[in-house]
Image (cartoon, one colour):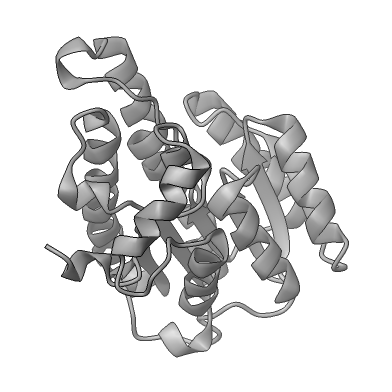
Length: 253
């Protein structure tokens, strides 16, 4: 099994690329000379990310994709193949994170969060892995969250979806290992992104860093660095793993 890591000119699809982790990962991969297909429902945001990547000389294109719509995923997959050819990498980052107490949660909101955060990554992996297999190589990275292990009384749907991502990673890794496709998961702790800022002020978010052993909250660039590692040659013997990136926060009771 040769060239099981990112090479200059390889295509990587990044979902949820309009902001946060997705934007940082896209920019890091652009610096590694990857070609990029950037997906997001936020057209303006994903075009901004695309422009940032192009400033480095990368071949990057924006696609408006609603991950809650299976047809959008299938159409975007076909379009990316037509535009670029077979992808080498997929970063399943896109997610929604509404806040709602368990006892007041609308079942429709539960359904939407699971559809976008768990079903969509499965559908993306299923469709894109077929192209990777045809090409003989590939890497999939899923993005979970520490809430998958801690729970959240105002985000049971989000926590459940992210726990599912960790399990899905193992199943995909087992199914695809013989096809020279590796699948791993990044589990970010609290970071300076829109998800925690939906429930607290920026000052409150920064204050949370005082209780973390490394003394700060995470950044999107912290996650981008781990994604780059997982796509690189030093991760060649890793598959089915969930890598926790939280500044040591899980060591604190």
